[in-house]
Image 1: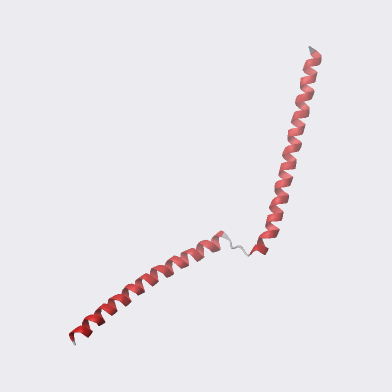
Image 2 (image 1 turned 180 degrees about the vertical axis):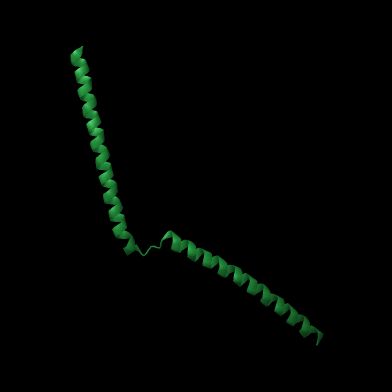
Amino acid sequence: MQTRHRLFDEVSRLAGGAMGAARGVKEEIDVLVRQAVERLLPDLDMVSREEFEATQAMAAKARQEQAALLARIEALEARLGETGKTE
């Protein structure tokens, strides 16, 4: 009975060590992948999230301004059309 406990203790200790080693390998792989991606990103001409959101906000503002100007042009054309008909 005592040898069984020792066997289970030994197996448990080995499994724990293997889990720790696997965790260490996973962390090392994560670091290596992160470093590789960080080296590749500058070559891909990608923008940061902040730059994207700033550009998106500028485009939305430009669309609003365009819509306002278009409405003004249409109103002016309508007024010119009315003026042209009465003459």
